[in-house]
Image 1 (tube, one colour):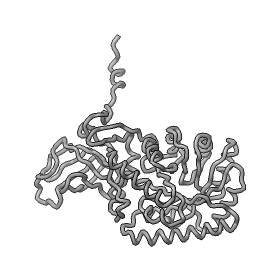
Image 2 (cartoon, helix red, strand yellow; image 1 turned 90 degrees about the vertical axis):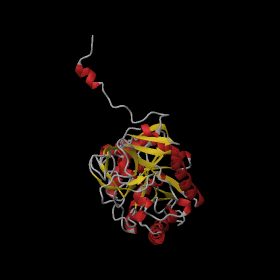
Image 3 (cartoon, rainbow, N blue to C red; image 1 turned 60 degrees about the vertical axis):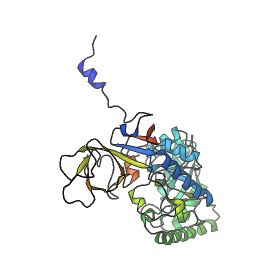
Image 4 (cartoon, rainbow, N blue to C red; image 1 turned 135 degrees about the horizontal axis):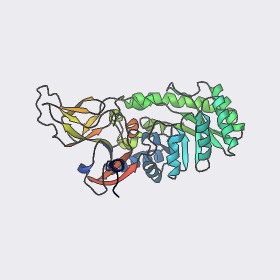
Length: 387
């Protein structure tokens, strides 16, 4: 008996973007590509920086959403990871990650029920900035006969989540210290805007002010008899100063492992010269108009809230625009319409992403390469909007 046309059609599928052992140029596009040599260098440099200053590296998995990456960061010495959502944390726990901070607020019964279950398999912590939310977390943990660590989030300049007074922080910390199901561990103190301040001196000034603000909170909590064992925060852009501040116990850096065009615009010290290990590989799909070529990757493969991507490994080309499914390249400064220097139809182009975090979230798989050869494909298992 032969299969029906409908059955044959439903069995069709697009082949994986790459095969282990194949040449880099055979990768189907658009695809995220990770250069393992540069990636390994980045892991080594940030871990060495954290070790040198006696702070933990809690690598932020929201940057990549890929358990294979997190496991390699932990193998290099990271104390654990951060996630932003409970659903995001689940694939990492399933992959064997044993220490996770949800560096965000978690609200809603289904999420809290899952969070309680995850505490049975890994050391979990969560941030709070509201007594009602803290009470709901405690009740969920009590119902599941388990417990979770609490970090009180303080607003140190981000203008987002976090309490704004020492009195509010103290009240939450005391509640967590005395309530079954939750245990006060310390403070969450992240300042996202400083990560992208370009000049080191300006970043240093902001980081110094943030550290002083955190110190005031710690003094109040300790004066009340509470132990602040963890102060978590910092990031790739501020790690240079936060590691040496004497206030943070762990760094929540994430983008350092990959770098992007926005972070590349910062000025960096030699010890933290991270390599651009991640690229979006695209193919020239149109050369119909002289003076420009069009790539097969657009806003559904990357985001542009941090600017346009940059062309890598090839001088003299500029991204003119990015649309839903297309990226247009031109020769730098060429207003003549000439096509000399532009890649040919079918040629592959590496783009440095403007912002790595949301780009990872748009892809199912990461293709890893070394010396121009495909090594493995790593699923981006935690991708999605997150719950």
